Each structure stands twice: as structure tokens, then as C-alpha cells.
Image 1 (spheres, rainbow, N blue to C red):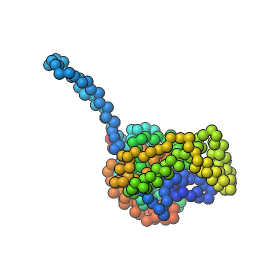
Image 2: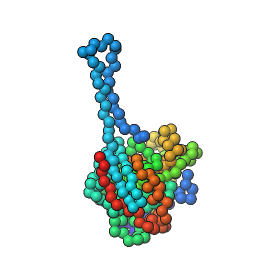
Image 3: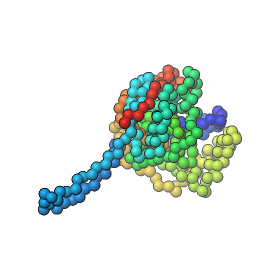
Image 4: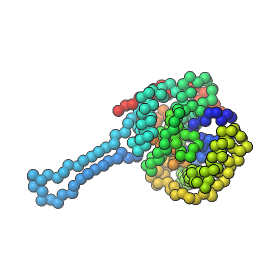
Length: 311
């Protein structure tokens, strides 16, 4: 597989493919285990009775963050998404692209039932039937934005990305979570997977080990399969024993959502969640069961007809 283009995706396999090194902490198809509060700022004054008619208490001041809603129409139906104000870089970038009609006529090029539906590859607009997609992107990334209240529950809108040191997001490719319901033991395993990826992230950014990351990038650029494989394995080996970071503990509130509504918990803290489907989740479910080829591309195109701002 060529290194000339990078496939921007949320990877579903724990394997690297040929020379290419994808983000691989995700999903094992053979063994699938699969609110967000508006900020309400209230200012008030507590009075002590004995107020005269002229001394009225100060009025309660309320500021409510209104979330931008987006309508996404596909050939499978229409869904409405809210964009989170807690992730302003991703929110503003998505709004900019919607205004430019950048998503109109693109495909959901990657669909995995019980996992995600992924779209936004600019090369998918005029792609031939069956052509491999997922490598298209714009010429910039968006800085990662993680928030403790935002997680991969069913219907979450999140940014795909390449494997990189700062977990920066693709400028245009996104995915919507279908996921599945988890029990306690599977959530414990997911938590371990999150921490294994965090260990790797902090390790490759540790000055003592950045030379391994740099060597991996050089080997990949040179299309040296042997050296690429060597540094992938070396990084993974070191990361297994790396402890110089604060381990993630899954909040109980998140666990309850994963146990009832479902989602993809092991992606938390590694991919930026920046929105949520608030209407039309049935469209996600309908797309997720469509027949796909070996590359997870739907046999019959699933197309985004239009994306528009609602408020």
C-alpha cells in the first residue's frame, strides 16, 4: 500500500496494513464487545426577609449557551445534529465547511454495523462504484479538543484523524457513532484500552522517546516496510510499560449511558467528539446495516445530499 496518501479514518482493526500505520486502538470485528449539559450560569442574591416594596430582590440572570443545529439530508433520510460549544475549534470549522457546502454530495464511504458510519472524504463526490476511499482530506488539521462531559455515546459526532503526536483531527472527515450496549466487564476492558492508547500518546511526546516517533515517520516516508514495522513494534512495546501519565477512569454517568443507550467507549480520550445527533438516529441505524465490500464501503452509495445550518 502506498504511503503517498494517508487514509483519514477511525481505524476498526488492531492491525497495521502493509506499510501504512493507522490509528489502531479501536474495534475488533470478530469480538465486538460497542447530557451533555447546556451551561446554565445563574447569578442570584440571597435576601433576608424585611425587604420593603422599594427594595426588590435582584432578578436572576440566566445565560444559556445555544448550540448550533445542523440538518444533514442523505438518501436514507434526514438527521439533525447539535454542535458542542465546548469544542469551539471543531464547531467553527464544521460550520465553515457547511457554509461552503463542502459536504454536499459526498459519501458515507465507510460503514461498520455496531461501530460507526464515516463520511467527508472530498474524493468521494465523483468516486466510481467500488473505488477505495478514505484518503482524501484538506490541507490542515484541527487541534484536538477533549472535554470530560463529551464521549462516544450513540449518535455522537466525532472527527476522524491520522495517527499523529497531538491527536489532531482531520479537517473534513467525520464519523457518527452507532455502537452497541456494553456491560460492566466490557467497560472495564474499554477503560484499559483507553489507557493503553493514552500511554502511547504520552510516551511518543516524552522527550526520552520522541526519537522513536521521528524514526517511524522517516521509515514511513521512505516506504521502508521493515523499518516501519520495527518502529511500530518498538513504540508499542515501550508504551506497554509507560506510566508517566494520569490514568483515565470512566465516569459512572458515562458507564450508565453505555450500558443503556450504547456507544463506543474505547474511542474516548483519543478522538474529538464535537456534536450529537438529536433527531433522526434511525437514519444512522439504517445506514449502518447497508451491505458493504471488503473495504467497508457500501455496495450502493450512501450519499450526503445536503448539510445546512438551522439556527
